Amino acid sequence: MSEPTDVLKVSGLRAGYDGIAVLDEVDFTVGDEVFAILGANGAGKTTLLATLARLNPLMAGTVTFRGTDISRMRAYQSAGLGVGYVPQERGVFPDLTVMDNLRVGGMFGKRSVQERVEEVFTFFPDLKRKLNQRAGTLSGGESRMVACARALMQEPTLLLLDEPTAGLSPLYVSTFFEAIRRIRVERQVAIVVAEQNATQALGVADTVMVLSLGQKSAVMDASDLTTEQLKHAYQI
Image (cartoon, rainbow, N blue to C red):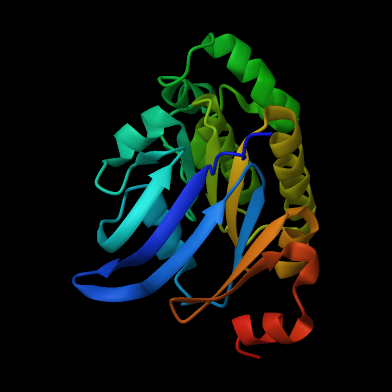
């Protein structure tokens, strides 16, 4: 039986801003799974996701996606290979309608735009009645759905989600995590999700990595994470 191929492999990653490292010597591997990154504010989660999406340059180390070194690629190149990214901010074009936002995501991928639009409705059915509404007039939860749906329109094989439920109501949080679970199962997309909501993230994750002050402090099966390790991650 052949060994499963790693979706994402990160080795010796060092990254930050203006020559100042936020992350140092970070190593981990993501398979076909939901991989959760937990840690307090300032731990480096957003920097890590932006670096994996190739929006932030590496200072050192390598990022390999399905056997291809993407460490020096630009964001549009890694997106073309199948890396989808939903940033922590709303991540929509506010002056465009919901449908036009989805069409932007549909510039990548092989299936018809309409077929993919119908598919994202199965994960985010509330968007169907918002298609002609400008994205800038949506609620926070609706905007996050549009951002995720637009990334799915690219037909990614890896989806990077940066704090997808930050600031959302409990109803939208539950809806979003249920969508994450279904996307993983039904679309067979590997998902890396950076989250502060540890309880919800652990409910859908297969593997968890704990970040503390820019360094990896643990990588393990989500079910094995202890309360003490979680307290350490959140510095409580």
